[in-house]
Structure formats: C-alpha cells, structure tokens
Length: 65
Image (cartoon, rainbow, N blue to C red):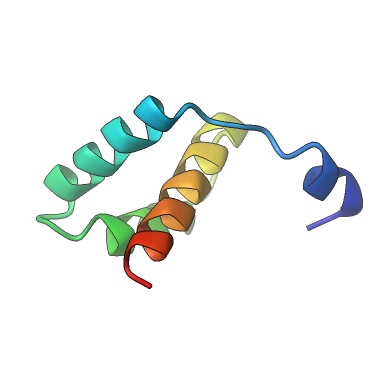
C-alpha cells in the first residue's frame, strides 16, 4: 500500500459494512470472511468494491480476535 493510500484511506459507513457482511454470509453460506477474501481475489474489481470488501474483512477480523 502506498503512502497516499494510507493517509487518504477512504471510509465506508458502518451500516454499509454491516449490510455487505450480511450479504457475504448469504452468498458464501455463513462464511462472510472467507467469502470476502475470495471475492477480493477476483479480477477487475472496482475501487469502491475493493474498499468495501477490505472494510468488511477488517471488521470481521476484529470481531474474531
């Protein structure tokens, strides 16, 4: 990650993250973290989608630690 990306990290609303985690759980049969990580490996993800999925991964990892 470059310096500008670390300084100007885009934010995602908590409600949007919670909604996406729920959708990930549905799409990936109860495994939202694994689903988000899998979807992050897909080619041609938009920047917005990447930011949302990374925010979901961060929140899910915090919940499980």
